[in-house]
Image (tube, rainbow, N blue to C red):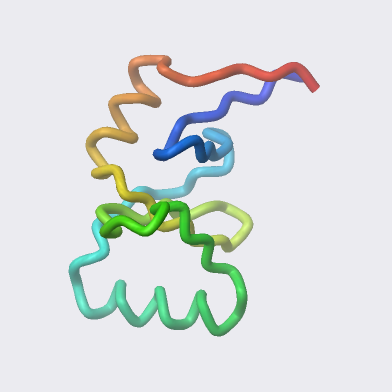
Length: 87
């Protein structure tokens, strides 16, 4: 079975098949979702200390913060700029 991963910045990757949404972290409701994810230990910070520019919502409930813009991640997925791994 092939799994396809997309680079979400600074050497971090996420499984394309598990991505539900890629959203911007600007709105107040999103900031509340981030706080809830941190409390429930389902928040993953993949920014390498940089500003969070997008949030990747995973189908298993995890929320991943990325320093890349949502458009960049989407273009990497659509442009097949992903890595495949046989399992």
